Length: 404
Image 1 (tube, rainbow, N blue to C red):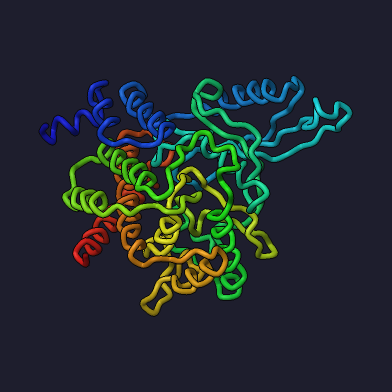
Image 2: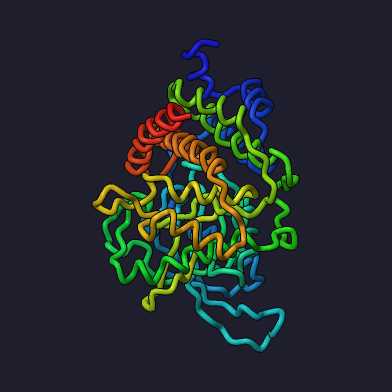
């Protein structure tokens, strides 16, 4: 198939091409659902637009319906800045939360956040998966409380979830960095946060996920390559669906990753995007929320560790080294992590996940360029900036491949 033909099929996918993609790159069932729907929608939808008035009307109707309270009141609906993949809004909800359990309960007002998919996202993910893992982590680590979720487009026009809004700081220097990359924490704040940062990751990786309701997650068998087959299949499929042009380094990397795919002995919950910009802390310098769980899946703990030592996601110290998420050097990160979990970090496995991380970053970047080019998101400018990270990702991929 010629490059021109393939490029046209990516923009106007046919049912046959979609089915070929699905069978060539097997992924988890719910992720197959959202990726397939993305391709189907690509032939139908124009530029992404949000009618604010219509959204508010539909949101009011939805909340009244799911709460069973016709007098529920929504006020102060506002769009949030920040965030690279979802449209986010806050609003105040006044209602009797305990109605049905305690009919005499009083009205209360709570600030909530609405996370809603655009027409196409820089990462296509499943809102019910995100809600389920947040509920699984509730009480284990600090996360937003989930109120409602609808992974269909029926209620608001796009899939969404509604959660409690938490006050706190994400970017300490208010530098407006893209998706929180390269943030600088002054030494005192760095010392206060770094142990908490590792502790929460250790907790995520040691939670008994089999006892949680994670019905939208496929469960990989321990001692097999199943988890990594699904993960690599996901990002290879995304690259093949979304890239604007072929890239030989991506082809070479995919071949090496498949030929050297490691077994996952102890599957754990993987956050998938654990870094600065995706946690928040309060005035007492306590981390009060771990955010952005949409890339969560079940896999090898080395994946989150390798992601954290990715240089483009860290902060240079001015002396030639990089601190993971601006907090600590990787050696200290591993030492603390091993002490907390009892797991042994294997350097040879980190090598595979290093390449996987940069393949993933490059795939995300190619999607960013496509959704900006086709005006399928509310953040065209940011998507073009994220697209530029793809050049960094493929350059690092080439460097890592050359070292093998």
